[in-house]
Image (cartoon, rainbow, N blue to C red):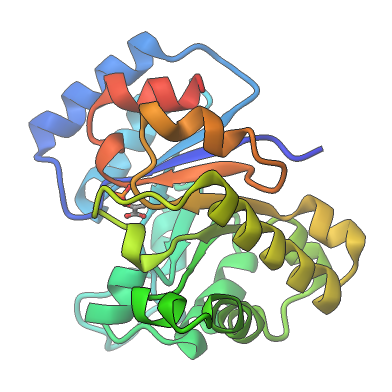
Amino acid sequence: MRKPFIAGNWKMNMSRAEAEEFAAKLKELYKDTEVKTAICAPFVHLERLAEAFKGTGIGVGAQNCHFEDSGAFTGEISVPMLEEIGIDYCIIGHSERREYNNETDETCNKKLKRLFASSILPILCVGETLEQRDAGREKEVVAAQVKADLDGLSAENVSKLTIAYEPIWAIGTGRTASPEQAEEMCKAIRDIIADMYDDGVACEVTIQYGGSMKPANATELMNMEDIDGGLIGGASLKAEDFIQIIDF
Ligand code: PEP
């Protein structure tokens, strides 16, 4: 059975003092539940968060990594570096990195392969633009991303993967996909996994929805059959909001 998985994506937010305050508050509010939880934070906060959340059941994730282990890649962080400080998850292919940092399906694929050779579990983001949705191409676009990003990955790896369906038009805009729209796409992704692998893998892969998810809409989204969790941007910056989503 898939467990619900709620992950926060702080993006490039939070000072050190704010991160510490958040961690203290979340630990105070958090009750060990059946819901898996993680905070994906800027690199500079990761080690302290991993320390702060040790033994609580709250995981810590990075927002990117490099596919090589070391070398002349100025400004990059490798998977072994993240493993060394006890990181649990890593977001791959967020639409902001695809748009501003030249992330492609090819680099996502290499990063996924490197992560699956480590102890860190990837959260792969896919999703269409408003223009692509208006043209009725959302399923075709997302299917192409999933197929290219997972190329060559084993069934065993994909069973452990989290895919976040994040329609770009709903990220940070306050405009959420309706539960029906989100469910339709999450189901379509599960069907693609069934085609690429089999029903068992499709049943095990975790599929999150992301895009202006907040306490007010989390329950109806989480009640949909193929939505196993959420990737939360803005509403993960306040522990009081984030905990309400975890407690959906
Ligand atoms: C995100 O950054 O992955 C995201 C879903 O952001 P927001 O919740 O702010 O729309």
